[in-house]
Image 1 (cartoon, one colour):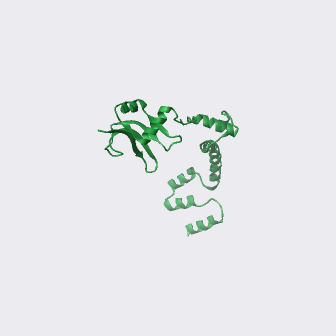
Image 2 (cartoon, one colour):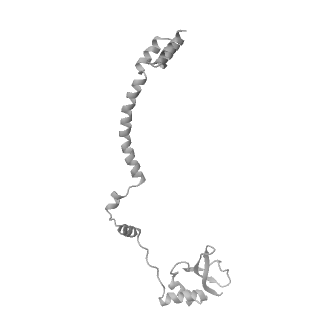
Image 3 (tube, rainbow, N blue to C red):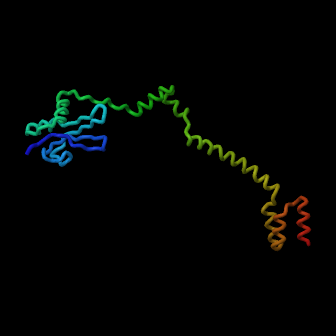
Amino acid sequence: MAVKIRLKRMGKIRTAIYRVVVMDSRTKRDGRAIEEIGKYDPNQEPSLIDIDMERANHWRSKGAQPTEAVAALLKIMDEGTLRVAEPKANKKDLYEAALAAAGKSEGDDASGATTAKKKAAVKKADAPKADEAKADEAPKADQAEQPTADEVAPAADTDSGAAAAESAEAPAEGPDTEATEDKAGA
């Protein structure tokens, strides 16, 4: 049986990634592999090449032949000319750099910036004071216009239905009260 070290294609349609595998030469390109010894992603900058060289040398010693593409990858790994991507910056460091660029220090960000939630909380704190002021004004205005509950309740108890309803609805003063009294008397 002829054994090959070759690439097995995986990934999406236009963003292929490959696994470096040991396979029988007669199997399909994406068929079953004997062993997976690495991966290759040409879409990254620089390309990701991660091959277990110990296993690759083991299979070469047993007679496995690498394909041209895999031979080039193995050569890069053997020579040590593999380019390594720069490590990604920590998000906290990026945030602090952005604050420094904006001219603020770490202590200033808590007092300087206000969010919608904080503004809403401030409005809610002011709201009870406003509600208390409105509550104080409302009963004074209502007392002048309408009779109190004590005045209406005894009238309902002593008089019968229609007379009690008319006295509760009619205002105490004004020209309209005479007209309603005339209608009630007639």
